[in-house]
Length: 451
Image (cartoon, rainbow, N blue to C red; front, side, top):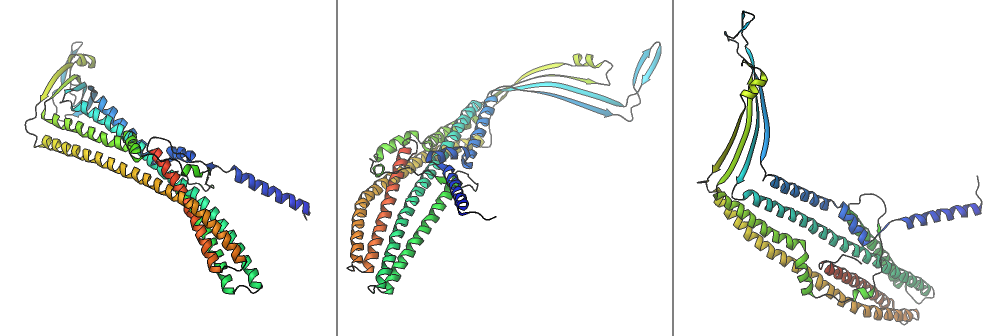
């Protein structure tokens, strides 16, 4: 069947429309979408949550250990005496009967309870220690979440930057193509050598290579972001492109001291290191309790039955029933230095916890200082690059006019174009790096990440 031109045109328009609708329906991930999705699906974060659940179970178990324990037991046994000659004699209706049972059966039944009344408060301090461990596990979740959010923000901004870099490179490529076409025209009239035209062609090829390289870097950053979000499907992945204005990059940067002081009070890694010190203090108390006596109470109910008895099972259960209640006191005298070693190791752990607090505070200051320096440095670079781009653009426009009039050579034109491209790239990079570090400084003050 041969299609008419109108039918072919209609089919092509429908295919274009379907393709457009499909592209427009593709999900665009905002920074908030990425963070929310990672908070639910990142494997490292899920593992941290499982560790917290495990810590919660330890805490509940130590609390339950404060109560008495109760257990029931029974033992049933069958025995055999092959050489038994005498047995049980009974008189029934004036008749004497003797029965020898070589097989016999015994049963015991018991209900036992025990309770540690006092052990130097080891059990109660263990509850406190497990509560601290549970809090630390919760803080570890927050630490992991913060780390993931920082990585997402960094990758997200890199993707934004590469999108802009590709746009600039494409504009540069269009300029290179125009210069190459202009060079061919000048060559035809004999005012340019083939060597000069070859240089214009090489510049156009270099711009094409720059686009390919930028697109490859963009795809790599997207792949890293997908991996961080635990997205393994083959569906296209793209982010929402927010408007990053020059005003954002020029916004005031908070002081280093204010950011650090605020971070000290809210960052989970600092709170976690302080809980390490609290944990070591509790372990010290538990270790010292090894020098103290332990008081325990026990109780039990029990009975037993046997087939060799002349009474029935119910009577035996009642007759053999007994109850007991006891108390035991354990006083440590010499324990082969176990308690002393535990105390010394707890003291070492406490000193280590103090050093860890100092180290965490130092690392936090170093991280914030790095972001603060990057924000200030890139902001100054951005301010400088804005004027540089304007002057390089004006210079290149003038060079292009002079080149077209034959007043400038090919080397001067290519040099001017390279300077313009470098200035544009520097402006973009400093702009996005300033915005990123500004947001990270806000994040360390307790604000949500956003662009």
